[in-house]
Image (cartoon, rainbow, N blue to C red):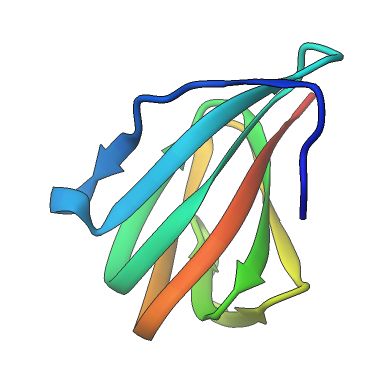
Length: 104
């Protein structure tokens, strides 16, 4: 995946003692995305806006807040998270890479 004509934020967003790292970009149309990597472990994220998480490399398992079903996602797949919600993401081994788009 490649982004053209963007403004990039050089400072990384670092979570969970450096085990989740992302960078942000603002596209020409004003929309924003973050992209980064998740090292092995289990992490919970809350959302203010609705999000689409696209997995670009690796594999993860996800449980959306309020759900009990676990879903597995690999490169080329995505999942959506409602606004004012959250999800728990687990990477069993290696690294999972992602692109997060903020939805209206």
